[in-house]
Image (cartoon, rainbow, N blue to C red; front, side):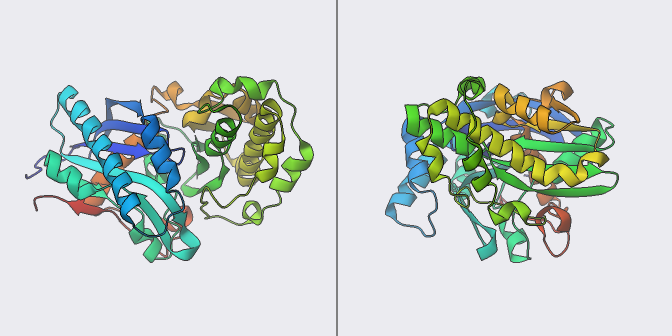
Length: 360
């Protein structure tokens, strides 16, 4: 297949640290300044797949069990890709496939996202870009965050001046765009922390709208102890694995008090990360599942005294934001454009990344 137009229709696929589902988004873009959202959707993983994926978190090498789970995950991705491709009116030129992170240890030069891109290509016969992180890591970067260049495009598209994009996903990460500067880093654990707590306490997936957290009382001693982790005083760029922060003591609290404490912890880690930049910002745009947590958002607005909006104010679905970013990154990768930068991942110099499966 030869792509002859400047703008490519790209399908981005993202499954985040919370291991709760798959986001698919179609964008039309030139990989630089042009961007049009063409639709998408989010689909939950079946319970069996969630359990399987959570069972291999922290893995460092392949075995027969992991291979079976990867096939199960890949089959699910293919099924949902076929559905969205059938629904879409435009021909898909390219797929951007992030995969499911099971281990992220940038300090050891290791980040692993499972998902068989070759099988996806063989099934759909659409060129696919995957493995977005490795090239950054081998060149001295953390391999994350990957979405800041997409945030910069959104800033330009909507004529914003000094803005931060805060992703409240499994881990919170932020991109600060003030003047010509682009700085990004992981702030700390986020929805993955509270979701694990809820599953342990009441066998549900999450605290819907943060309603239980709103009724709790924060344990300030546990909060202070959690905030002593040296990660939070580390200077960016920096990136975090979901297993880096230990929070065993939190499980001694009640459901409501534990969730309140977690939301205060998330808020403080974000504040610690952003406080030196607050005076340089006009607003923060929230994306990711945590933007629906009323208690968390109230705490953020109370702690950070600047305007905070969700991406819906820009008419962009916050659940599909990262999937859209990987659609955009796939085109940049295909064209050999830079996707990671010294002040976003710590890479030695701005570079492209990703691996292509295609006919050519």
